Image 1 (cartoon, rainbow, N blue to C red):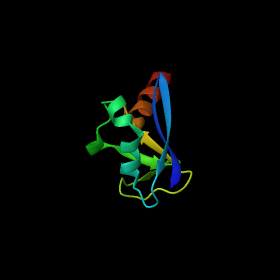
Image 2 (spheres, rainbow, N blue to C red):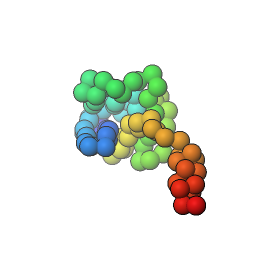
Image 3 (cartoon, rainbow, N blue to C red):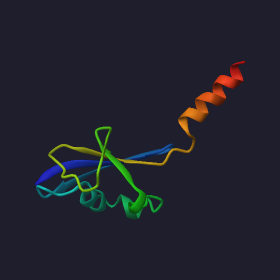
Length: 91
């Protein structure tokens, strides 16, 4: 068994769930076991982006002891466009 953390953050709330998984379990299995999909229905598994310690990974990737799986929310604004708009406001 390996212990990992599954993390999901919203602007007003951060949730960290510790899950014990079998060796060779995948990121997807860990996310499902965490219960976060039921707790936050806005997380859609089909379009879900996840990472381990800030590095984007595939849902099929096996987890290792002490991994921190992060569930990413979609961006609300395009970063390039936001920078462009801020630059225009300065002039």
